Length: 177
Image 1 (cartoon, rainbow, N blue to C red):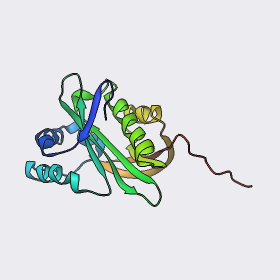
Image 2: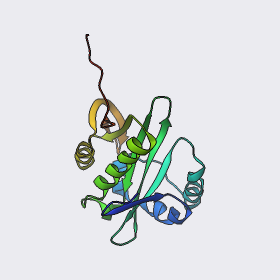
Image 3: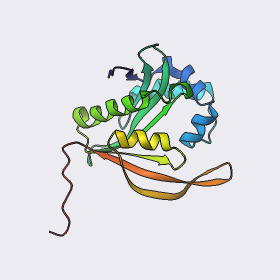
Image 4: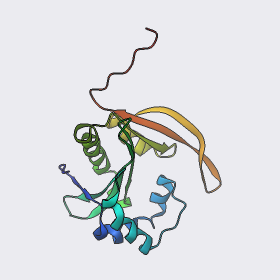
């Protein structure tokens, strides 16, 4: 998938070193609520196994201007019975604030709705991440609820907002009639 600023390509072994380096960024860890520490070997095995997955699609986000890895994203827990999936994205610290995440999110939503035929894509975002909230809203996600105290980070509790985007042709049911 290609946009004007990013390319989304299958996440593979060639991205393991960059993905590992991204796990060391304290701000990226905070924004994604990642407590777990990863080793390079674990990330190498992870990247090598992505093509084998049947319930998810993992993609590397590549900056088209530089050809460099700037993050990764996934449609996960794809449920073909309910035409739904989860979504997650993590960009490297140098990639934020340039619209790359917004373009990558729009590209993957178009793929989810138009190519796979999904009806719903959902995600969770923490209350301390207003930049991501704004991006997701621009891409068509709406807040559907809040999970109170879903993340404990450095001794503080944080809420997670559940957001979802529906396929552009989705018809919402009418209530009461």
